[in-house]
Length: 172
Image (cartoon, rainbow, N blue to C red; front, side, top):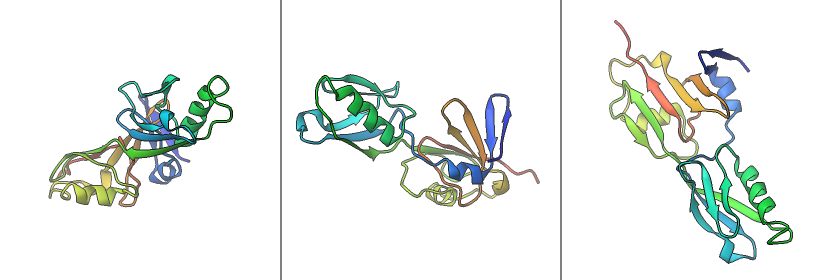
């Protein structure tokens, strides 16, 4: 994996970015938690501004930065042994947080994330490039565990929820 750190940002190649596509939960996501055999503990929940989810009995569980499997384990760990023996927890993401596209694009702004989103699909969703767009220098800013990643994007680079796509202006 080719990564370079400059001024607090990590720059990585599009190939390296594709290797790290495991979805991480964050503020703005809506999830469905199912505790098998316990409908009273199951339901749909939003991650708050701090990235926590508030559940019956166990209250706040830190979810920001966790994968779905990691959050399932965290919830099961809090339910056991005080409340349930061997709890089975399943989580499904109902609504992903949006991604944003800025710069030389016809309709910049925030758009709802859809599974399988790539740069070319995101640009098409935003109305395409303007005539001034420098398509060879598109970058994606992505929040990582302890850093902000800057990814040089190609047409097939995956776009994840919360990403910020920046399309610079070309100079004639």
